[in-house]
Image (cartoon, rainbow, N blue to C red; front, side):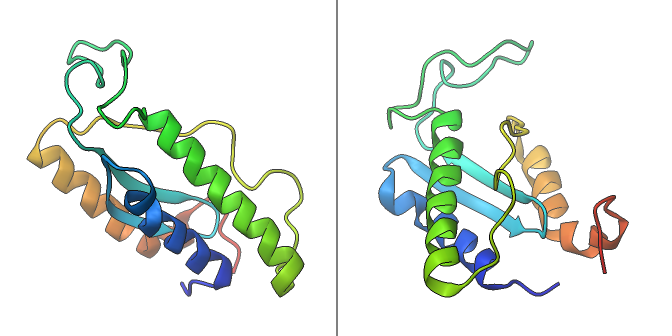
Length: 137
């Protein structure tokens, strides 16, 4: 897989998140042709910012004032704005419909084993691209 200009823009926005939002850090990520995987760290998040081990929903936000959904929303908004700019300024192909789906999948990383498994999944995702139901050669 080769990352194109649009993929590089998404990478750039991802890498800039910690610069724009104090208390937000990023981990491993990969830009795929039709989706994105990444680890977001809400630095200083306590038990109120994360669901408990028995399930449940997040209550409150981290000291940053941002919840995970806030960070994801801002990432999607920033990339969409830059994409529109790229269509106008650089002749990128216009995307019919919305650039991002409405929701996203999240998983609270609970321990080092979980973190290592998720990192490995992210890093190996490009190798498995040909198996994706939306793969087009």
